[in-house]
Image: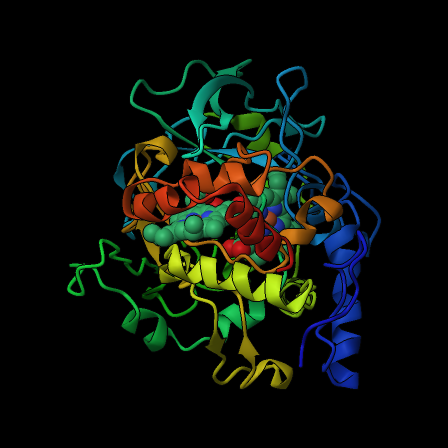
Length: 426
Ligand code: HEC
Ligand code: HEC
């Protein structure tokens, strides 16, 4: 009931189709907070001000362009907003989360207002990785290599761990949040009791609101428990805007100019602003599938199942209760189990986040996959956007997904095409 039919480059920007009148108004009230750039403080009363002083993007839309994924930096270009670099040193924070790099914090802010220096910048280069399909057809993947430089406060701590993260699409998130936690956890098989080589673990992460560890669902390692907390964290880390949840400006101790910069309010985004933004982000609709000819489509779906993709990319869920009535009791097809899986060394970042190890990632939803590059031309797939195509994304799968990858790699060309056509229709 929530899906929309639009297939254009604006397909990710609509509200759930079944939102009531009142909820539609709340949704409309969140749109500007997502799309309009935040201004440098001090602004005029009523301004959306308080950007930075250090930040990565000046609006949500700067990274989630068209509500889709980020653009991937090319070698020739300064990194575009859309890919961020997370930092941490070994150990954990008091709640079991990553321990911040002492001078730069948990994310490298590569931009700033005039009030303080930016923290540093990074560059990505790509190394070719050659391979062949089972039928002998060659392919070339690209492995990213990151170089951090232009650091304004001295070198990174020697044992700093880096994790590049591409901004993911932000559609259907309220629906994913409305899946009962107990059902997600029931799908986990940490000891692989069923012996299918696929374990699946739930991440348990700190929830600011309840003050305890709960199921993590959002982010590439499922490190955020709710859209509300993810939104407040984005305001804090990505934009440098304080909120009731994170009221202290994002300025590690040595960054004194940062801490002295004028504020755009205390906090800069008041409770109702964050609530509207959260409502907006939770109720962005997923486009309807665009299946092709019936028999070809059925063949693609069958190959998806027989290759074992659905063991992690679980096709169907039913949502439970939710504060937004439009999201309750919906049958949804996100193609994710919301669990962590070890995808092997090729994709590992070596940086743990709560219970997620350095080689585990949350299965990303596949809905909207076929429209990803229409909404964000030139974007890539996987957590760091390294895959230029969906086929490349599959070929990077290893670890628990090695068997599924091998089934894809060794399919004959017509079956590969059928599977890819199915994925493009999602
Ligand atoms: C500088 C780029 C950047 C900006 C600006 C940004 N985001 Fe993000 N966003 C990201 C990245 C990168 C991730 C993945 C984070 C992770 O893996 O932990 C993400 C993840 C998310 C998610 C989780 C999606 C999912 O499927 O798990 C939501 C929701 C989100 N952002 C909302 C917002 C909102 C709302 C704003 C504006 C207040 C915003 N973002 C601003 C880069 C950005
Ligand atoms: C063991 C669990 C598992 C299996 C099996 C699996 N995947 Fe994945 N898939 C993942 C995880 C986890 C990621 C995220 C990895 C990353 O970003 O580094 C992912 C990422 C993807 C992506 C990129 C999504 C995006 O938003 O960028 C695609 C496409 C994909 N998988 C398709 C498939 C297909 C097709 C199959 C079957 C041939 C398959 N996967 C099998 C767990 C799995």
